[in-house]
Length: 444
Image 1 (cartoon, rainbow, N blue to C red):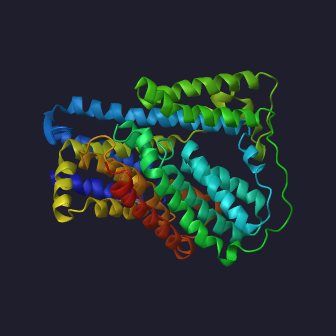
Image 2: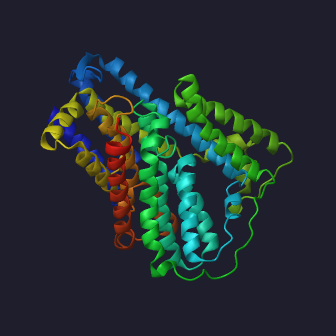
Image 3: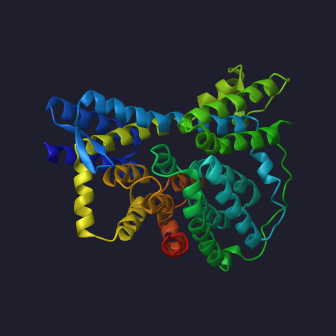
């Protein structure tokens, strides 16, 4: 039976990886794989276990109990993401991100490269790398007219956004997963991963700034853009501040992060309702005014805009990986892997390279079931770094890359030839910095 389970998992995994070739949204194989795996376990009355991290052993459990346990852990992540996505959509409803374009006052390509890279690094740490990429490429399309130049900028934004998301507990889905699962704490994650992430962003940006694509000035004049609402800037700072507040709330109260995110959402939503009732109106792009008008509140409108397919994908993939974990397969696989490759640094770096080829969410989910190290063990910080930044090496290797690919129609092989080697240099540079810091600077 275990062989059939592995075949189902690999088939589902392959379908997720090849979603662009198969023209099937990855949420479909993820949900199907999850349901089939648990059905096989139930129908064959297979023994399920709960991993005891302290004793490093498997404890027998009942399928109903273990499924409820994993559903609860998964729901914590999904509710957290729903709250964060809604806050971002509320900011967008008030056109708050137009405020960021006001910071762009130079026509020098080299200065613009550094400006976009730094903005991507900082923004992705707050609103996650996917949303930061969408925001910055939207601004990029208004600032730079030449498509070839824009592709270079988009490629470097992907590298910087993934680097920025790796050191923040709210910057990437994978780091959020590790944080919510109590594998890392916000303070220790920042302490261990911030400097390697900065190096991962600075090194490729520095190399790229000397290339022909970033020499000279951009064509045309910079248009001054103001938010369509007078409350745009206020909602931007309020929304970003509310998201940043969540790690502090968790540290003080020791409650799960989604509780703090719901409080932040309630605060942002309150101000959104107050401002929208102040005779606020926004003209919708592409003539979809009826959609906005159909919702009597900005909160309802924002909830209708969040990406539910992503939420369902996370549900499917996390519970599918949980099925393998419950059977003890990941636990035994980790033992075999440690015997084959005793150096865990190499294993984790291979995870990073792997996340460029396959989705980093199931990779990190699998690693959480494979390793039983205690909270804030350097292993978890290194996994957060590798999974977060390794995906930059291929354009399909991260959510930021996939969305940029769609927005700018970036060719897979163009990215592979022009940007992949820069991302690889950044990834390796940051990894070396992490190992040196861990062994010589932060070693107690």
